[in-house]
Image (cartoon, rainbow, N blue to C red; front, side, top):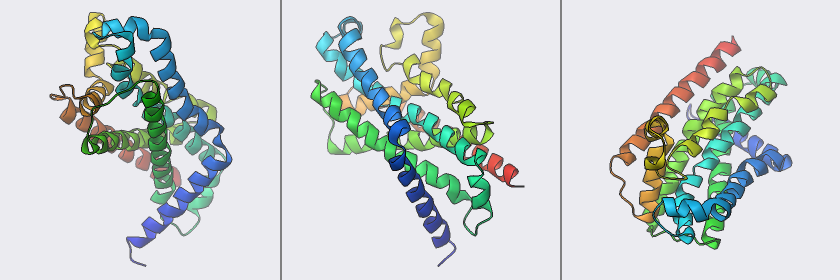
Length: 259
């Protein structure tokens, strides 16, 4: 094998381990993916009548406005599972056992990231399926759908590296489950549910300058044909920035704990 083949093979082994673990213990994966779909149904059927007017359409049109924002809930929710999984491995000594083995050390974390990406994209696809059943009518071409899922994949990878660092820092799985809470709340505090123009001044300023608003507007533009403007480059910059910070932060903690 070449020097590149070993890390890829080790990462594939760790990916299989995480997928098997998710299959044997599906309760957390199920809740992290199903909860955003339940919220989609609640917001559409319970609040859609009132909120649909706020977005300038009828209650039946609210699902078209709501779905792109709700698709970003799953990347935020899966960070909880990643942090808990990493903290569980660390506190049970599994990570220390892997460190004594002749494997690429970074593959331990890479397996978590890639496994989470697969689960998150399947969850987003399931949410889109449910949204289509209840009236979501996107106008996107195949290329725009690919761009939308590419943007979501980039966000999942970025947030997952941030969650890996949180899991390594946490004292136990219980505290790890609380650390991603700000990330879980951010999609609700942007333009995903209602336009930011309807918010009070302070909240509006926060909503317009937090990462999930440009991400939501970019997804909405790709899927529904609305104006994207500068949201696209800003969304990509947020994803790359969060991903770079999360990767180097988690790797620094991992190396420090190895010594």
